[in-house]
Amino acid sequence: MFLFGIAASAAPVGARLLRAPGPSVQRWVSLAAALLLLGAVWFSPLQTLSQHYLLTAHLVQVLVLMGAVPPLLLLALAPAPPLRWWPRLRRLGHLVVHPASAIVGVNAVFFLTNWSVAMDYGLSHPWAFDLGQLALLGASVAFWWPIIGPDGRRSLLSPLGKLGYILLATIPQTFAGLILALSPRVMYAAYLAAPRVFNLSAHADQQIAGACLAVLSKIALFAAFSVIFVRVMNPGPDADDGGGGGGHQDEPAPPPPAGEPAWYRQLDSGPLQSEPAPRRRVTPARSPVGGGGGGGRSG
Image 1 (cartoon, helix red, strand yellow):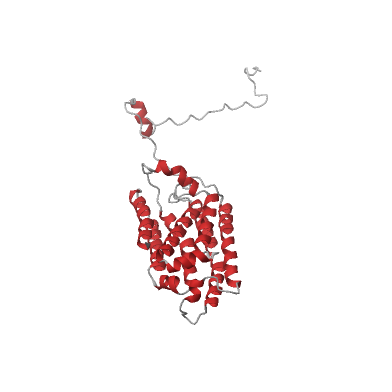
Image 2 (tube, rainbow, N blue to C red):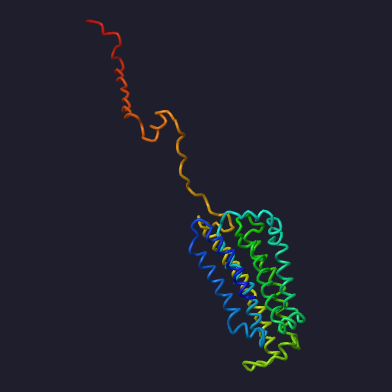
């Protein structure tokens, strides 16, 4: 199921990069980094620790899926002509990525997939555990969409509004982390019954996981600030992935219309002949006072 998640993440982004005119190298690097992170959290010992031993390993996966992979995927999206079937889904897509629905959706999926009953069921049924992580990744992509804005639409959020949007979204996760860290009992029966590794008790593991969730969830806030800062400071022609701030670009002048008169074609070649130098105006000298104007009298 995780292979399907990686393919579903890479296919639309890669197809859009291939259809885009001259995509930048940075977009391909961003896509590669996102896929490497997905491989690291899903096909490594971290996945084994998460699904069988440590709650801390699971929450590290959650933080990577929510705070690192989605912005990298969206930064990799290049502007491209819309597909023919997209207008049918445009209205639904705009609703899903609206800031109000996206922030509610990502927190709802987070709490549902980390609810003790759902977690205990997922740890004993791998397909449910994998499906929960895929749902969390999808909800996180929708959450990051208003910040990155890869569809080129004018964002509903100002730069300060985007930072507030991220901060508001991390508040519920911070409280969830504090509850895990300060709880006097182990909240997940599956981890309580799991074999112990690294000499960590189930309660100590839960405390570390809660502290990580409460503190490290602010990485998303720092990542959002970094993205917004780069967009504001680099409004160059390559800033075409959502901010709409490509700046003014010089365009070539349109060619003259066909069949124009000869004098029209000669306008671009400078003046037809050299202009004469302006004549210098000579002012007549004034006669001295008493110098006579009509001739002197003979003596």
